[in-house]
Length: 300
Image 1 (cartoon, rainbow, N blue to C red):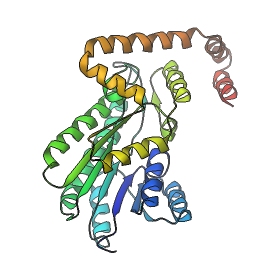
Image 2 (cartoon, one colour):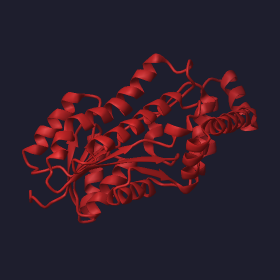
Image 3 (tube, rainbow, N blue to C red):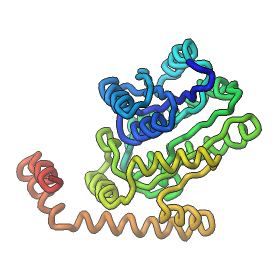
Image 4 (cartoon, rainbow, N blue to C red):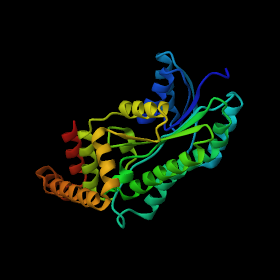
C-alpha cells in the first residue's frame, strides 16, 4: 500500500456504531480494517464500503484475547506501511445494580469493554507512534461514565475506566504525535441490546425506553467523534443536552448524582406500575412466556 494512504482499524465494525465509523472513514478516503468476530456481518460492512467507492478489508478479531490483537498487528504490518487510526469501539451492555449483577457478568463485561480497549492500545501503540505523519486513537466510552446511573453499574464502571484510560493516554502521548479522542454519547439505537445482559426485567424496559426517546443515531456519534479527531479534541460528549450534564457533574457532582438517582428510580417505578407491565407480569405468572410475547407485540 502507498505510504500516503491513511489506514485505520475499527473494532466491532460488523454493525452499529462500528459500521458507521467504518463507512464514514472509507468515504473520507481511509482504508479500513473491518474487525469483528462476526465475519458474516463484517463482510456486509465491507460490501457497503465498496458500494460507495471506498476500500477496506475484513479482519477477524476477538478483542478479549491479547494474542488475537497481536496476530492482527502481524497480519496488517505485512501489508501496511503504517497505522494512522485505531478506533476501539467493540463493546457490550449490562443492566443491573451492584449486588444484583452476578460476578460472572461483571467479569464478562470488564473483559469485553475494558480489557478489549486496553489490549488494543497496548498492541498498537508502538506502531501508531512510529507513523511519521502522526496518528490517532478514538476510544468509545459513554455518558454512563459520568452519569453513574445505578441500573447500569457494571457498564458504568467499564466506560468510566475507558474515560480515565483515554485521559491518561492523552497526557502520555501529547508530545509523541499521537492524538487521543474519547467519545461519550448518550443512549442511541444500536445492536448492543442483542447481547445485553440484565439483572431485573424492569431495567431492560427502562433502557429500551431511553433508546426509543434518543434523538441520536450511530451516524451522528461517528461523525461527531471523527470531527473531534480532526480538531484534536480529547472529549466528544454528545448530544448537547448531555454535554450540559457533563459540565454540571464537574461543577456540582453530589447534587448531580442525587438528581440522577431520583430520575432513574422514578422512571423505574413508573414502568413497574404501568398497566402494560402489570399485565405482562400477570400473564407471565399464569402462562410462562406469554408476557414476553406481549412485549414483542407491543414493540411491532
